[in-house]
Image 1 (cartoon, helix red, strand yellow):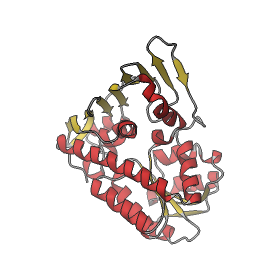
Image 2 (cartoon, helix red, strand yellow):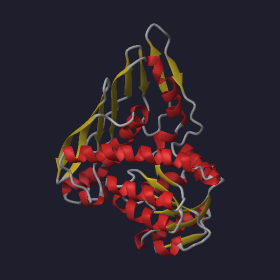
Image 3 (cartoon, rainbow, N blue to C red):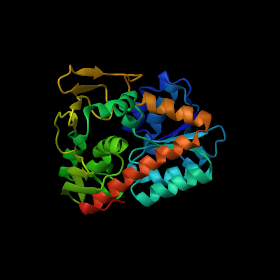
Image 4 (cartoon, rainbow, N blue to C red):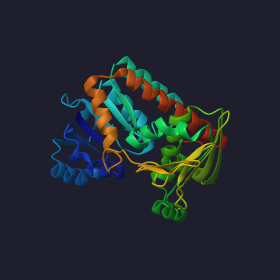
Length: 325
């Protein structure tokens, strides 16, 4: 892919930690604001990026660019993705896909209309360990309970309490614990079980935004609890409890570094088939392959999953009376 990167924040920094191991990606451009300029020039020199832009339209007019990776604050995802799709560029958009379900559906329709690739970059969904887990989860019998907890105290929460509101805690910018960290849990569960029958969200809300919360998803025979917090920290494994055994994930769920399968009366087995130590490697390998093969059936499948997740998000936010954007 001939890639343009939109943004210069934390997630883009993380992407640069793995990009040298992805020679199929040609870095054609990076675009950001004037406050990003010095940082972007450092990236340009270090990673041989051809162009630096301060204007997204100028960037999108570069005919050498076929794919745009969007790594900016949540509230900008929809508008930038829409512009890129209208220019018939492939789009890789960071999580959360959009702020509203209607926006996700609109982007899907636009991508299919223009016959271009559109993916939500959600790391755990593309890891080999996740695929292996999905293949062997039936071995633990009927799934009864799933417990996920992604909780990391944010230094920005300290600033938030002191009166400085950065995007991650700004409801107008699509912030909050659900969108920032619990979204990984939602993708993980919906990828396994599909859409739930019922969604509720017990949120700790400060100044109109959820700083932490407990998401409950109910299925016919399975109950799911997903905890996400930006105002507190805990180490908590993920458990998938079946009536014949349990699967335990001890690493963060967004990197899924391994998992342990324990069947009743059998010796436990630890599984790790990830292809790379960095969590973003496999998703970009898959994105590149889909673009090269123009595999629109796979694109539709992944978009349908992202839309299912956005339905859960919208129900959860409504249940907690949180209004984004």
